[in-house]
Length: 109
Length: 223
Image 1 (tube, rainbow over the protein chains, first blue to last red):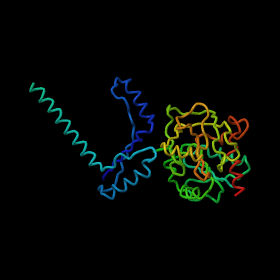
Image 2 (image 1 turned 90 degrees about the horizontal axis):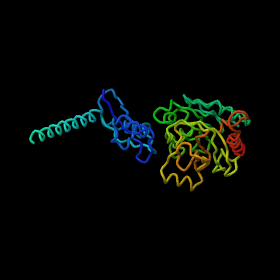
Image 3 (image 1 turned 120 degrees about the horizontal axis):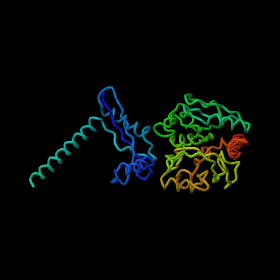
Image 4 (image 1 turned 60 degrees about the vertical axis):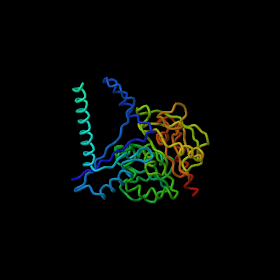
């Protein structure tokens, strides 16, 4: 089984009352460094088999016709899940490296 | 004169719309979302409610119901169609009307009597009103904020396609106080407030909503 991940966000110029509600609640938890919150939608489309180019094309069609409304929303990405995970893994490696570098710099001082 | 009212899963105001149709002396024809058939009606109303639970986006799933396969080309061909509240959202999602409806800017559900100004008294659904007439009907929605890009809004204004505007405080953040719009031809009209809840003395704030139904009756009889 393979998954395609579709991310949809309200266009930047469209007011996001839900995001604002979240932004308003964060300071109550003592998290006060975020000046804005935008809330989006993620769809995970599962196929019985590999995520081929054909599957991705179908997912893009789904994203543009049903999953988003082009008047108010942007499809920000349509990706096979393994790619999403690969990106995440890469970010994790980078984060670990940065931590190691910081630690090395600390001990060198 | 036969006026159809579509029932989707989650429609709530279909019975009130059918009742309003009967009150003006037309034959009320229930239509079903799963039928690809308009049963030969002379006009169609898409009623208020929460079709498909408002899942995904309001009206987004209803747009692909079998009945819409018949309705969209008929509307493009001139069939009078009125979308009330959720029906307006369905018309926007179907691209029969421009723009979209998003969550109220203050995030609360609104239910109140609402004054509207009739900005276009030449559509299939407004010809029994006077241009600029103020009417009071019911407004009740959580996602009634009308939005569109500046170019679309300017075009709607220039072409006289803003059909109704909110009078007094803007109840939901709709751009330019827009409560309802029409297509170029004037046969497709959508609005968030509910004229079908203002058609009988003793029920609702007025009987100002009757004009929608008498207008389309006159229009169809003429045609």
